[in-house]
Length: 230
Image (cartoon, rainbow, N blue to C red):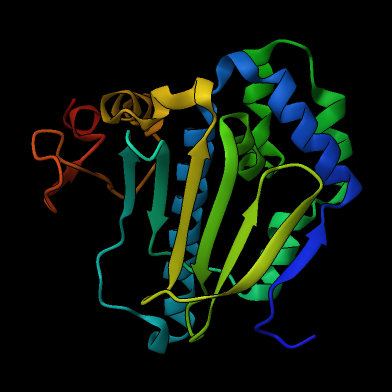
């Protein structure tokens, strides 16, 4: 199959089990998906920083940042970073499969206490899948630093996902979550800001959002600014 063809692939059995678990066991603590995706974005930026130390040609010159935007009309929330990005193979490996040992350990640790269980997600490296707690569909567009091609990954979180070639101007990753009808609170900018402020203690880069007073404007501010000033 040629590299730029669209491929439809099945989730690994462990990934399917985990998706089902996320959606049904952590339902009442849904906002954790945003914590996990922002944490992943921060990790990707840290990896880019490290890569630049070893290979200066990967430096972009842009300030590191995470951008989050909520679209009430489209019922979407988007998380964008300018971190290391992923190659096509990495997309398939990272988003389509999960290490069996990690999945088993995660499931063994589950207690039935949703607050406690939600803390395990990041620990076992399965945080991306928490997006399906609120998503009908997730679209990822990513380009690895040092590569010219970008990759698009898309799934409804059921049995399969698609991978295809995409376009992206610079390295990094954009995750667009198409929200379920009962999760449209996360298409509200104020709600999203409150979640970011709640969970951004460990984030070393600014999390930016469009200014709520300027709908449709390009101007941004730091979503977690109040916490950082405190």
